[in-house]
Length: 77
Image (cartoon, rainbow, N blue to C red; front, side, top):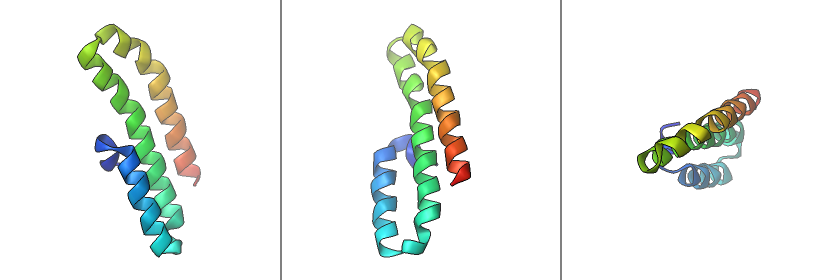
């Protein structure tokens, strides 16, 4: 999940390569990719808040909801 703080794309690429080498890790890496994406949804309003606090507040509710939904899907995987 911490990798998602820096780059969810990097986590996705890294886990995809790992899964290509070791197929049995696919379920775990799928969860990791989902959680990294969830962190990305939480990162966006923080970054937006550095530029425009009103924008960050408007984005916060839908993005937190998207993060929660992504975590729920990752939990099912």
